[in-house]
Length: 227
Image (cartoon, rainbow, N blue to C red; front, top):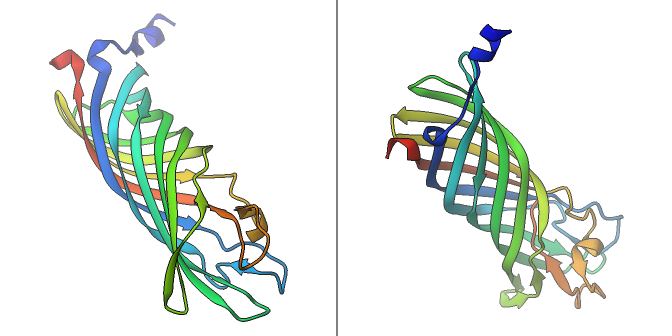
């Protein structure tokens, strides 16, 4: 038991790191599950598009043992996500091309498992992500005529995962990560995705949210204990 206890070291100030990261994102909103003949969005396609994230990050080691480290990490990110798709009235044959845009503040809080090598290495993290909707918009094109569609930017708690590699240069750490966030609260049907839906011509406000967002980012963190 004493030998096992000595193998674990609690993180101190030298295990607290702060920095920032930025990267590109890809969002995907599933095609809705609408009954045959119903007015539907994304008939035969889905909203997909690019975006970006940027903001500060922090990581604190909780404990480490023989070649492994467990850390708590949190980010405060500004995120922008766009997605292109189209709406189609199956009965009348009308079509509207649309581009969604969503702005948000993102707060992923994750537990990270990594190796404890001095040169850095692989890491795997998971945890909840609080997404606060800030603003949203949508541009629609119907028969060459462009206009704005009313939207709403929701807030939700998603599930975040991250696979990364960190290059350790002493006080400076350079993490490269592939992140994924799943939003379990996206409605399945077109009717549910609109707030105040009345008809194809008066659909109300569309919920600008994505089922999945993938993010590839690079960052820099500094160890406070080495400053």
